[in-house]
Length: 529
Image 1: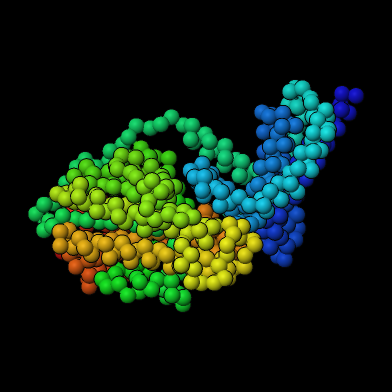
Image 2: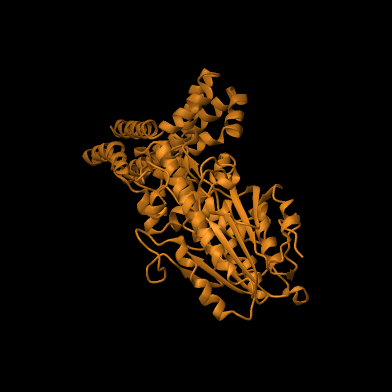
C-alpha cells in the first residue's frame, strides 16, 4: 500500500509538472516549432522532451527543499506572471532583469501592472491552486518518501536526457550552442534559476572600495576658463527614431537646427538594461571586463573627477544612479519638493534650474553635472511627456501595450522623443548663458534603445547576444559651445567611427583636462585644442 500511495503521489507530481510546462510555455513551444518543425521534425519532439525533462529535474530538486503543496502553489503563481511578461513583451528573466526588478521604483512597477496580468493569474494559476488545496492530503508525505521519489525522478530524467543527447548528438550540440534564446523562455525554471542566482549574488559579502587611479590632476597650463560639462544620461532612446539620424518623422526639430552639434552615428550600448549600462558607461574598466557586482565598490570616472578637484553633481529624474553617484553629490527630482515642473509625473526639464544654484556654489572650480533622464521609459510612453507634446496621434494611452496597435505605440514613443528634444534644447539655451565664464560642453547619450513591436518584441532587456539592433544602437550627441575646447570641424570627421559606452570615461577626463593613469587605450571621440 505504501508503494501504491507513493506511486499515486508521484503521478500527481508528474501530471502537475506537465501541466505547468504546457500551459506556461507558449512562447517557448512556438520558438521550438519555428526552429525545428519545418527542417527537422524528429528533433522537434526530442527538443521538447529535453526541455521538459530538464524542467522536471529542476522542480524535483526544488521539491527536496520545499514541500510539494507549497512548491506548486508558488510555481503556478510565479509561472503565470512570467507567462504574461514572456507573451506580452518577450521579456527574458536573466540576472540583469532581476536586478532591474529589485531596483525598480513604485512608479515604474505600477506602469507594468494591468488587468491582463490579473487575468493570466486567474486563468493559469488559480484553477491549479484550487486543485492543490482540494487535494492537499495527497501531497502530505514524509521527507524520506519525498526524497526517494524525487531522487528517482532526477536520476531517470538525467539518463533520458543523456541518452537522447547522445543519439541526436549533432542536433543537441547545435540546440545548446546555437539556439540559446529558446532556453531563455523556459518557464518557470529559467526565471527562477536566475532569481536564486541574483539572490545569492546580492547576499555575497560587500567588498572593500577599490581606488584605481594612483593620481588624478587637472592640467592647469591648458586651462583658459573653468570647465562646465553637463552629461545627460538618456533613457530608452533608440538611434533610428531621431530625425537628425534620418528618421522620416520630425521628432528632433530643435536638435536639427542646433549649431555646433556633433552627432555620432555608430554607438553601441554596454547593455540593454539601465542597471548595467549606466554603471558600465562610467566605469574605468573596459566594457568587455566590466562586472556589475564590482561596480559599486570600484572607483569610476566621476570619482576620478572629484579626486582631481572637480565639483561633481548627479541630478536624477529616474530611479537612481545605480551606485555610480554613491560618493558624490546626489539629488532626486522625482517629487514636487525638488522639481518645479510636475503634472502626472515630474519632468526632466525640472532639473535645469539647479544649474544656477550649483554654479553659484562652485564658481571657482571646474564643474561636472550629470542629469539622469526619465526620457522614454516604457511601457507607459504616454506618461513621459506633457499633453502639449502629443504631436503624433493616435498615441497609446495604456501601460498594457497589447491594447494598442503598433502604430499607436510608436506614436506615443515618438512623442517622448519629441519631449527629449525639447529638454535638450532648453538645456543648451541655458548653457549658452554661461559661455563667457566657462568652457561649456553638453554630452547626451542614451543608456540603451527599445523594441517597439519588431518581431513581436517590446521594451528592452534582452541579453546582448540576442538583442535586436534597436535595443543596442543608441543616439549620442555632443554640443560644443563657442567656448568649448572641442575643435568642432576636426571632430566632425570622427562622428561615423564605431564607439561604445566604453568611450565615455576617456571623453569626460579629456574635456576636463585631467591627467591620470586610468585612461583606456581607445580611439578618441573628439579633437581638443
